[in-house]
Length: 379
Length: 63
Image 1 (cartoon, rainbow over the protein chains, first blue to last red):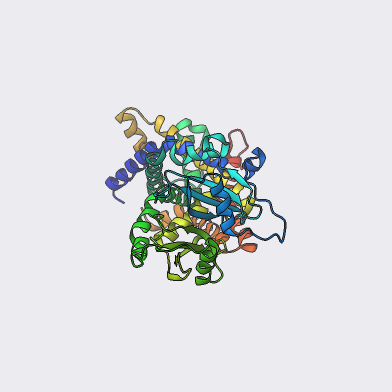
Image 2: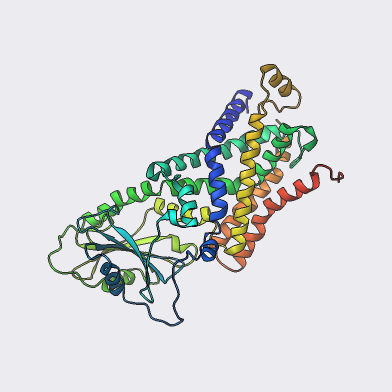
């Protein structure tokens, strides 16, 4: 590498890191706690009621929809969503009859076995909800979420550029050397280098998947406006009669993909469905295949599947970003490992910032350092 | 920047990176033994940080 390109990489590393460092610390602190959100919700009594007795039969979907609608007869069902991990938890979105999006109505959570209705609390009212909102969008909605996504991308660039500048810097130093007796700056440089390079792959993966998840409204929106819209446009028939039951629709969708589970069902008129067709979206049930979605359009008047398809690669990437960001796919030991990596990443952020704070102030000092111990322009 | 010198710099980081990638992928591929492989391999980078810190902590006799 030429000295000029190394200088360029150091600038990239310095500025991408500095710009995202404040947000990164917030993400580390909130993320550290959110890794254990199930445990915290349990402790705080904030978890959803998902109790049922072994062997108990599920209630028909139609009766769940009826229960949900009874609470607010002015609204109509638009979307059903099924929890992948907890089969007792069913989410039902009720919206204004003319609404095709998700702005004017509300979500209802029902126990699929008992029909127990539980109002979703506002995020600010629960600890996990509060931390999640701070983590995802800094309490500033869509714009904040996009901001956090951009910060995530900067963090990814910072990890890559950090790796590039690591090599030349460590050429004459042993791996993992920590020179604590040599002053604040050198001690922090060594900690930053060891922690940074040891956890680099984890930080890269969690940063990148976090950025992808931040942009999820854009990604699902793109799928909805292109492939899904083209699919529903091939079946433009309007509603003329009455609808078959939602259970018949679900059964028809499941029959199109043997062995799959329900993930979502969108009612006709919803932006994820046709004018007369339900979208039944299914997934597998292993750690891997529950992230692979397929969709069947089911005629609301006949209960017949009109068309079935998979989802494009970018939807699979988005779905797979979840586990690799949350660390929720390998039990409690993986959650603990995730938390420890988060702490180390926080330490990399802080030590990197200290190295920048303690940078040599004058050019002559920088030159002396650069010619001496090669430390001058590290941060 | 000779090839030999740089490969020394990258030997341990590359090994930790391979272990991390394997560990991250393992638990998504299956349960049981795959979870154990994930926990074991992902712990290595953390353990390396802890051991380096412990051994070189100020005031500890040099080893």
